[in-house]
Structure formats: C-alpha cells, structure tokens
Length: 105
Image 1 (cartoon, rainbow, N blue to C red):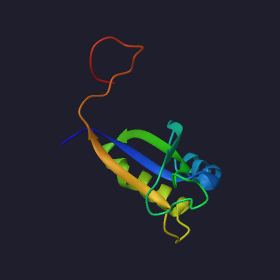
Image 2 (cartoon, rainbow, N blue to C red):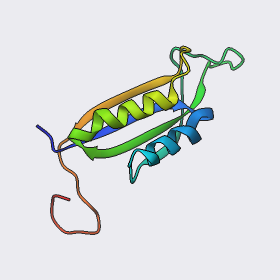
Image 3 (cartoon, helix red, strand yellow):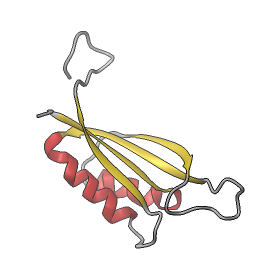
C-alpha cells in the first residue's frame, strides 16, 4: 500500500475561495491550483464548444488523510447541481522533495 496519495479535484471556480478556506482550516498545508477547461455534465450552451472553466486542486497527503481531504473538498464544493465537479484519490508510487537528494520525503 502506498504511503502517500494524491487527491485531485475539479471544482467550480466560484466556490474556490470557500474550498481553500475549508482546506486550510482542516490542516492542509499545501496544494497546487490550476485553471482548467473542459466539458462534462455541465456544458456552457452559450459557447460553441460547450467548454467550461473550472479549478483543479491537487494535494499530496498521507494515505490515511486522503479520504478526509476529499470529504472536506466535497462538503465545501457541493451545490447539489450537476457539474459540481469530481474528486479522485490515487496512490503515489514515489514522492521526492526537489531540495533533497535521493528518494523519499
């Protein structure tokens, strides 16, 4: 079993501030954030390609914390409307800090 997991969430941009606030309050000490475009359950019918802009949050955490991190995101991001987003939890085979030599954390 992997020691670390990666939690990736695609969420509505308009809810990003409250999601980040909840993650900080829950003890998440680092994440990556990018703007992404795509389409799925919630299309933008006013655009010719139906694409929608969302935020992607990526968090590396201990495996035993991943479900709690995902729950925090889901609670902060859910509106009950199709297109709220998705959350994936994946095992991490190896995690390295660039500042150090060799493998490990």
